[in-house]
Length: 356
Image (tube, rainbow, N blue to C red):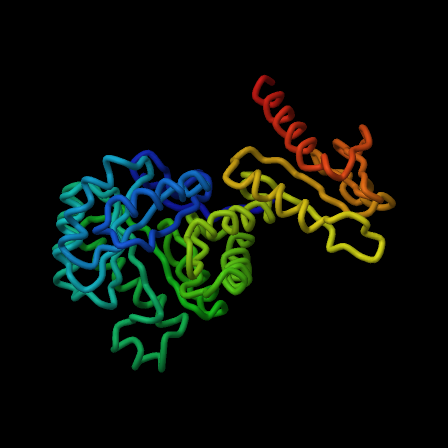
């Protein structure tokens, strides 16, 4: 059992962050925020996939003006991502966002104070987002680069700036594209503060690289009890981030959300199209929040035994397979009916759980 670091509890609208709240999965749109229709469509697709908090980029005042129209058409807490221009942050808060994310490396301290003043008046959450790509120049010189120590000092300096104004609705993130740096920085700040911490490996790359780096960076920290919200950053469609994030949480037994599909790598004994079966089941169960362990095995010899703790599964043979639940064989199924029978059984299991 992983013992989580206890942090202060804050709320993003109706979503609690930190304290004893579940670890929250977030993402960020990559649409032009000024395009309300496209942005709303992507947010709703992310919510359907399981996203719980959403961030949008605000590059200019026209993007800020789009906030009310976006808010009317979504259900997720909306976070405004601000760089350089402190006025965008202030106006975003006045337009009703649940929180803002600012990068202290590209906004002057006196302007940050103005942002904090408005956030305090409106009780809005601020994420202090320290990023290795935009650290303060004096810290880069002091530490000889964007080291974990430099990231940590930047975060501590800005926490002090916020606290001096009596502001405590803070969330932190210390990010780097270098996984060891990100891990070390998050460990250091977790040891020095009790503010909620957002985890992510920035600029993690396309799907495979993002999955590897995020599983190592985010997963290592979560296993140590560190982290309150997470984002797996993927170059491309952000909807792809969500199953990866829940996959990390499931693998560590932190949150059992969605289908945990166990499938063998196949070998010379495999006599069914296991790849096609796995792809179809994964696609059919994408976005479903009900937890279920589904085993898809290509061998009738070892399949049932290897997946004995699965809720349901198929162990295939020559054009047919054995349907089993909790390791117990139920019946034979033709390969052409694998997907249909599995989904029917899965739906029945979920309905039975709801009744109990």
